[in-house]
Length: 151
Length: 151
DNA sequence: ACCTTACATTAAGCCTGCCTTACTAACCCG
DNA sequence: CGGGTTAGTAAGGCAGGCTTAATGTAAGGT
Image (cartoon, rainbow over all chains, first blue to last red; front, side):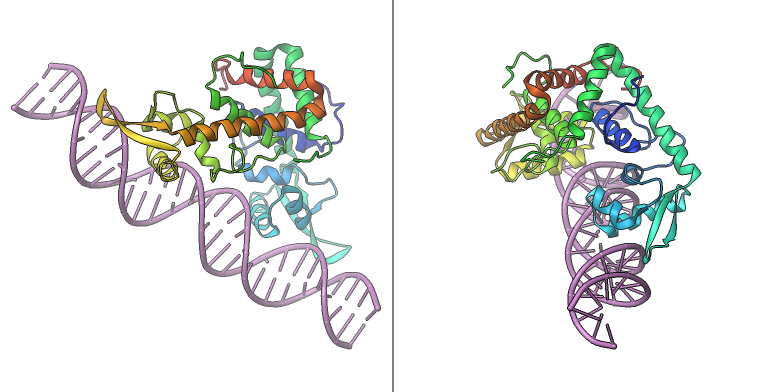
């Protein structure tokens, strides 16, 4: 598949966005954006999409996903119960907690990648190798473009 | 904008799909897929997206939108109350009713088209005229492609 | 003519995703 | 230190869609 010389976007952000884009186009995405074998719900990908390797704060994740912190609490609760993320106190701010991916969480990200890869294979069948690569490039370009008046 | 030599897809289906696709990419779609000035909810576009000029049956719309007839009843109820569609008995089957767009409903479809046009202008800014046209063509090609194993 | 199936609809109850309102603990600034 | 602000959380609500179940009416096969 296309190699990873793509700009800006976090690793899973690309996965999540492409996943949603592709899913909208009718490709089956099992259990949200992450591949099979994980009881992940679509809403969960909001976390995978943004979480930083060092860990992210809940409010940070909420802001990035454009939902309220309260809603994010729920998502993180679920993910924590499933063992995909952990909450630890942030050493720099005792109010805050750092949410980090567990090993299992990282595996989910990897599974997501291979799901996308599978879908991209289907797209190749429709658009051809070149077309598929172009589509992907365009989607990514749009996703990382600076906002215009309507965005 | 690009002219209408596009294959297969019903007029509004293209609008709805592109609208969703573009919205996913971060472009603002006011009031669902249909443009401003109409109190249309996102769920309503499931009707606009599929309704045939001669009128469609409720079960047909439900199946096409992948929702239950019960849920579709609710959507059509709302749309009818707003004056966008009407229900008339189907002459061919007295059990059935034909749901058709009113003039106002057709206006909503037209508004949807101009919303898409506006969005496509933004995309032109990112991808260039040619790129935008290519993207649109690719999306439509995918949407009208026969299902592969995962679709 | 009878039985089965299909269409449209209503109603109740549920789940999910997200919201608002409200609160506590910790931080930061003057 | 005191007052405002920020991080996280709890509780309750609302909308969209689901399931299950029931009803009336019409169609269609045998």
